[in-house]
Length: 502
Image 1 (spheres, one colour):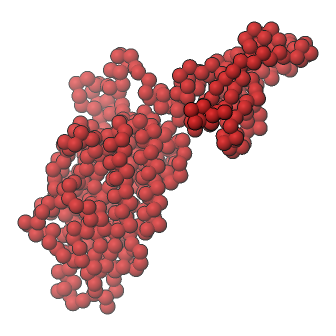
Image 2 (tube, rainbow, N blue to C red):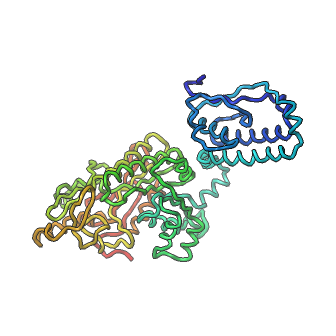
Image 3 (tube, one colour):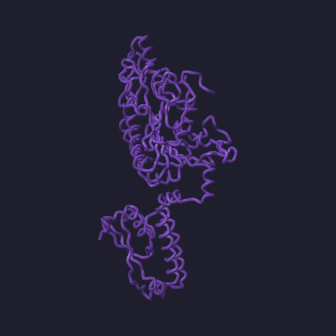
């Protein structure tokens, strides 16, 4: 029978007096302890307010609609019966019980009681089942630990201690720069010890953890302090984000904030296939953050979601009286250039994936308790990221001296000389394109202080009551049409048109 429209798993309950009298004493004690442990795990995981199930008994009865929870599990021992109960429970099944007057055979009692072989078997059963069920319920148990109220003294200690940040896509350009900054950032408030580190960082990437570690330590910042920071305050996790896994929830559980940078292709030449894959990643990460009850999710978007405010070579947005581009500006994703014979480029797939992340974040902020900050990042090149290495291509895949032409879906390549017009026309068009991209420059120094602001700012939802904020992520570039106003207190320091600060 169904209960409230939910499929049912029925777990019989042995009569307590008969259980104690008819079973070998060692089995009664071992299975009573096992029931206490498994019911405690179920209660802690939030599957039931106060379960009192005889899980060490069996067999169970179940709605056939739930059979896949058992059939899809590969266990060969006692766990093959029990894991399915917890999986069905997690999926919304009603798990109920009813008492049965079961009498254990007297012959079996006489044969097993006091026998070492059977005593060791009871111990083996406990040693097998408790770790397996604990591992099965790991996502729920991690969440429960993160939500558990702390004593006042513990809360004060936590406030003064390091906070956990999670960064996805941590092996990429921006991920590495942020990881280095947050690992080495020190507290300066009066309530903390002098020079105490502010953050612990959990770094997730599809790359092997040793490769991410190598990249962290291969930076110019490599030092004994950095190596100690990576060893003591960095947790490296290899995780493929394009498919759902309970590990996504575990990854983000207990985090002060999650910075989501991961994408299949982080450059504007992404294809539509890569766009679709990135959209999948964004959806799963937002879902995981909601399930993990993350306090704040920070999504890396792109200036390209407004890129088609400049269409077909028109340079209107380079004029002094052009309107500023703000978080409220009309969405025009793409940055599509049609400047033939000089160049042609289509960043539409790339920007659509970024816009997808934005809208998923907006929905999550509206329908959950999670705060969401969207950063529309400008142009932050890998490495030193100097103004002198910016080019008219809008991508670090081509050099400062290259022009480019379309080769296909979302792709760019250097243009052949025959494809380029006269020298004067070439120079004028190159200057227009280069100025557009240079004015979106985001220096390394401004990058890290921008993301620090996304982590620590108090949000008011830009007056909407919904904790969802969109910020332009550029430096303070003179003549730029990108608004510098923001709701997180970010104040850019560098200017692409000035000598960069040392």
